[in-house]
Image (cartoon, rainbow, N blue to C red):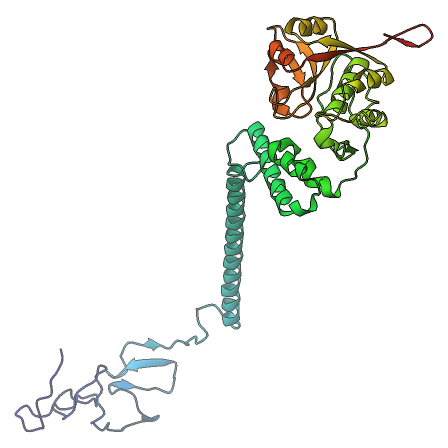
Length: 390
């Protein structure tokens, strides 16, 4: 129960007398009581004389000589209060050095937490990097990054070839002033397969190189004028890549008939040039055929061109060398080699100036009508002494 101050003494309530134990009354003193039942700052505490000296504690409690035990102020029969030592160092039982131990434990726990966080973050980074790399790998074409993912490897390789050639075509255009022969630039534009050769031509070695591929008797290889092994060799006033259809066709016939790769287009070009026969619209005179063939151990026989004659010569196992007119297979006049009759009556043509013409089957009538005469090429028979016969 709380008491409220009503005013100064004389308000009708009067002062409460002290108890028989010497305590103070609770009201009417002119000051409010604090929470401990002691008078506030406005009151003056009355000193109590005890046998052991003056005591400044709450009234109603006696202090004895033994500071360890206190009794209530009701005589000597009060409830004994046990004194307790206050442990100012912290938790009970922590003892001396307890604060240091607690700091150590807290620090250790923090260190463990940091290590766990580092491991978690590191694992996440590795996982994200792995996932990102896998996604990048899955979303990127493995043949060429310039081609969309999901495109087949075969088609991607075709794109890669075309894209590489496009880059080199740009290179050719940027260095066009380095080409003394403008026909090489036209070749690069007309034949995508020739772009690599044309791009390298300004710095290429203009001498012939050996033909290292194997030759097989009965199968003529497919060769083109712009092959880097002979395309840069000078022939008929130009690079052989532009004018070499005659020597290249004869070289294909030689390899297919003999099974030897010893006579390359550059070798045949030398034979033609030596006899001053690198002339005409196709850069090889028809007069060169029989002479050059004889130098190579071959036999060349002339035929009036017709569809049936062409098929009969092929049936005899003989290759046909023909100088076709401009506009028949391609825009320019050049030499080709006819090698095979198919089961459906069409024929295969090895055109050293055109991969497109080589890749398709031709009506024999179309080939026969493209020339007035053609030459049947076969391997010369040898006598017992090794001499060739026609």
